[in-house]
Length: 134
Image (cartoon, rainbow, N blue to C red):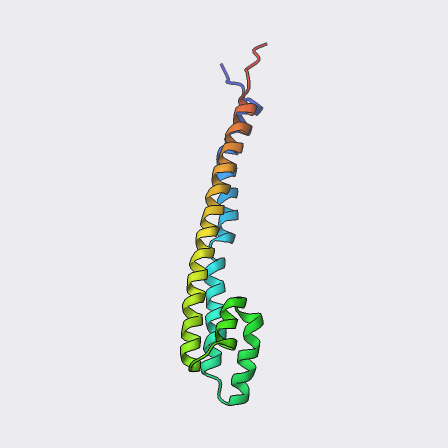
């Protein structure tokens, strides 16, 4: 006797495989953001110290306002003391902020995984529903 394929069971199986795939896809876009951000900001800070001329150095310092976080730029632009020390302090500040951003992204990803898992389970239960034997 051939077994009848239930559309609700097919839907349930699709949920079992598609939801984790979607969660992973969304998470993969969020995970590298803080790391990429820190690389770009560090490059901007390094350009201040490696500028070949004083004019180029002033241009690199002015460009920090757009290239790094406002408080990191303020440390270099308005800080006192030798420029290498200000850049080092700004770099440490930027790294602390990157860790905070990474923790925030990790929290949001966990929250998304939990939410999508619960929604997937509810959707799967609704699809399975009561069997109607005719």
